[in-house]
Picture: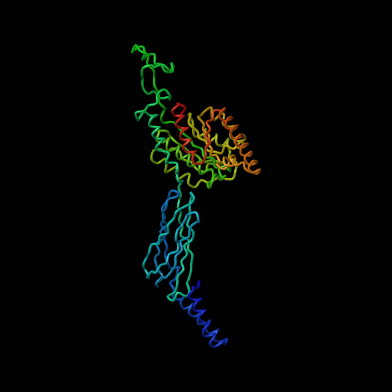
Length: 430
């Protein structure tokens, strides 16, 4: 039961007779009148338990985009329903005005739309639907909350897709589908042409030279239909906040852009999110189904506050990749983590595959390095410089083991990783 401002106003109105006749029985009589009026109003209100509620919500929406939750309310109470219906959601679902007034005759139905604009990716779930049914006098209301399940999957924003057209243009240049054709690098035979000074003598085709009576060389292009495995680290380092978002969100953006580019290049892309167990995986999916599958698999991924099992990562790679492939490790370039976890296992992995380690840099560290006005800022700058030197030393050790390292700010990580992929493809290292 709930009382409204009208019941309070009716009770306050009793001050008039009390002031005129300041007797106890007057107070008691007016209080009894208010209680009786509220009870009568409550008895005449439609029962909210006899209201049928159904929910309709889209299966998914991309982060920053808008959608809506629709409630279908049908009155089966036998009385006119005068009510306020509240459609509750998690705060991160970004629900707009979610209290709806309804005046519904018996047997009729109405749709109530609650706008949603999620602020976080993942599964956003609906809370209970609360129905507050008022009597004809508007003095009191009967209230009930019912479970009407609903789930909205919020997909990653994929803001880095704005970089895709320019990278696809460069990819077409590599593949020879535009006027520009890259020659010489790669592993897949393309054509023969006359030798010019500066060509690698190892590319000379001696049989063709003997037939034509002129020196000709073979030209190559990057091989297609290669394997790409993207590993997203979801261990404790992925939970660190870089700006307003956890590090794993920047890794997801980079994984999506690389996967879109590699798929368009004709490569087969697999993905796993791993810490001590597989949190998400996409395998054996290609063509137009790949990107929706990746977005759906990565949407609910959240970091786990555990140390990543790097021998387990290598085992997962060996289990999935029987031939040479590009293995992209999206993790943190933290010296302690790399020295104790990555370095002991990355050597054999780099021997069998082309390995790229991509990490997002913290822009606050660069800001600390610039501030040196006070003594405290000088100490902070010194600590930031030491951190950068340690990252540089770890990067050098990784490269000595044959690992390509991409270290960039959150907005730059995805395009930098895509550029590294194109450079490897142009060099014939895939």
